[in-house]
Every structure is written in C-alpha cells, then in structure tokens.
Image (cartoon, rainbow, N blue to C red; front, top):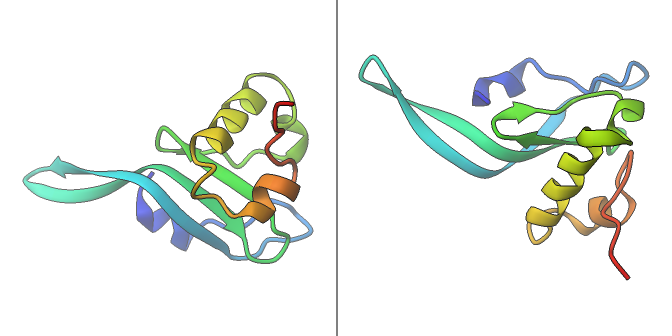
Amino acid sequence: MKPWLMEILICPMKECRSELHLDVFEKHTAQVDGKDFEEIDEALITCTNCNRWYPVIGGIPCMLPDDLRMTGTQRKAEDDFLRRWRERIPSEILEKGIPFGLVTES
C-alpha cells in the first residue's frame, strides 16, 4: 500500500465516513526509476469516529463491509492478522473490536 492512500481513504461505513488513522507494522522500500518509495506491507487502519478497524495484509487495505468480513477466507485472514500483530494492536480492538475482536482459544 502506498502511504499517500491515507490522504484519500475514509471510513467505508456510509453512516460514518470519518478520517482514518494508520499504524504501520511492516514496510519496505521499493525502487522505481532510481527513486526510493515506501511501501506498507502490514498495518492497522482504524476509524477515529466509529472505532472500526481494517487490516493492511500483504500491502492490500482490507476495507470490506462488516458482513463480508465475518466468515470465510476473509475472516480467517483477519483473525490471523490479529494473532500475528496482537502485541502491537490496542487491547480495545483485540477485546471489543468492531466488527469483531480476537477470539482466544480456551
């Protein structure tokens, strides 16, 4: 993901549409025509208003509607993301995240 995307992205929830905050967990530098450009590989995007969270996985911001994030391969990818970065993700997202938090194994 290009860092400048944060300048144009807003919360995708139609009742919200607020600014987003980015916490970068992993990035690299790519070179194009002899110039260095930062690329974000893994990050957490959070809404400053409705407190929803969206992961950046493999350089792709996953900003789907809640219902499309709850099951299947998307849910598995996002659960894996939460587990992988649990030490860097705020506890309120892990415990009570919208649309879901990290389910701990018993």
